[in-house]
Image 1 (cartoon, one colour):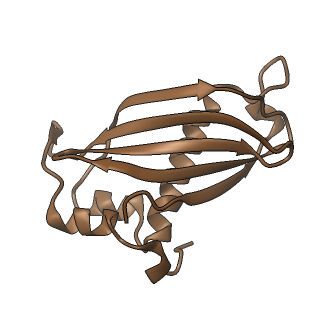
Image 2 (cartoon, rainbow, N blue to C red; image 1 turned 90 degrees about the vertical axis):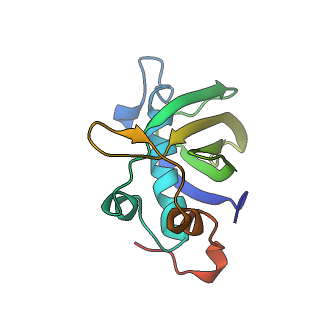
Image 3 (spheres, rainbow, N blue to C red; image 1 turned 135 degrees about the horizontal axis):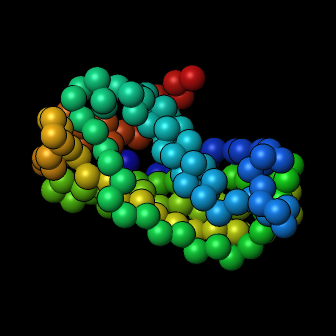
Length: 144
């Protein structure tokens, strides 16, 4: 189901921080990726399963706005939802919340293109993949 949110919790490791003790900005992209994987598992499939079906989902655009800080040992909650599905592209949106301080910290999005082949080429989202993307997570047990 479009717009249904999945939450993924991440404890910030010391190595995730910069010289000022804040979570390094590029790590947010890794957290986005981790949250997308959780989003898929909430719907009873894996990102790897899409790849086994012959599809790749390269990121073609990413955007983040950093509004607050996350520091070493804080717990970040990444909320992710599938916001838009076009002919051959999908958009995930993210909100990052610092559970430790109660602060909203970051918003962002990623655009992905459905692609296949070698070299990879964009393709329309196939019906079997669209069905996976539109699943209601309440109908599935989260895969581990």
